[in-house]
Length: 554
Image 1 (cartoon, rainbow, N blue to C red):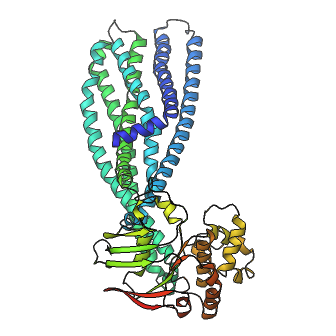
Image 2 (image 1 turned 90 degrees about the vertical axis):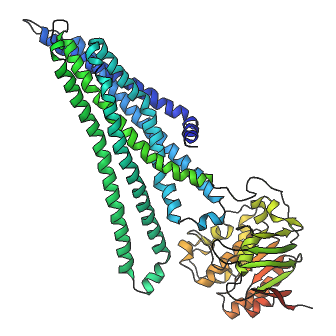
Image 3 (image 1 turned 60 degrees about the vertical axis):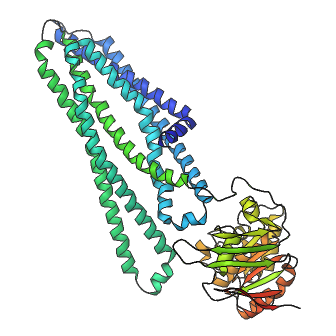
């Protein structure tokens, strides 16, 4: 897949990469012309007898070529930066899109720092390699071949010595590249640890402050930062070492070639201009030698990132993401048939569960912690796939539905309100489209009793609530989560301890409001609170030995 990946992205940005290659090729041609013009001027000066030679024409041409070379290099650098940022943006979008459609089981096995590092800074290695390194390869090759060809034209015997140096360069690049590949992996691992620690500590910051353990967590982060720094410095030092070292070896080789053939060059067959040209082109060869080493180091870094990217992209998305049966508005008949499920490396949570919910029925599910109440909901929402058995909606196996259309049938209020830093209105709508968006937001806010506290907020529905709704109380956050579930008027509602942070008076008011709101919907309540239980047509208790019915209206 590696070669295919490079080809895919090279083809996608073929015109930008072609422009970079064209500019760098023209720059290479101009670069090859500079030593010849300089050698011609120097040779003319050395060969002159008596009056000073007229170098005006040669020097004017040299200045023009140097100006052209400068302009080409600037244009190539600008084009390279543009292409690199565009490739980087597309890579990030592709990774993010793919991560979004991964099942939760994939994310359960990943540290969030791994995905964040890959999406944020690691993909820069790939974009830089494509836009800077790979696009410059033809120019480096042209400079190398052109310089050797001119050396051969000046003196074929001495020029034949140059290819003998290739094995030495190859061995040096291989040795340093192996070290660089190992360091790249360590840099990446250290950076991922750093991101993961920072994200975790910010998430649990209230607990850190409550237990007064700031110093401990500062120390842990500082250690991780220092490890990341040390590996990054080692990597930077090795990269800084490779290019100049290769250039130095190439320079020594050029000097060696001149020493070996100095007698031949100084003979009558060689003019002063040819001697200067041979020296300058031999020195010019140090540039592609250093560039080749940098190209190899860039490739090693990109190679490590590509391996991790391929692992993510190779993971299958959720079943039914790209295909499946379309579904209109569901009637709401839900059936769990012989259902079993176990999280990886854990004992089964549910075993051979059978449960039927009628359309329009409000079912309350109770039970001890850990018996699988929330797991039952996650399986219904297709966050996970059952180990065996099946779940049907209106008689159709839910695995056959297009997953996004299927999930739009549900209004889900989890135990923890999952809010983002934005306005209350945006959190209620949550990116869901609707023709009468503003009206629906107001209706949902009224039904969930968000209205009760809006008057105390500076900007009402436009009030910014901070990350995870940190500026609100727990009860206020849950009300917004409930309003979000009601916004799209779904035929099925799932309330997982949705009123756990309400006081008794507010819960009673909520229940009273919800009698009409939940009418004609299929509702699953996971709760132990008496007021919420009063909404249920039927109450069941989930246990390790299955389902038992507690009560039923009528």
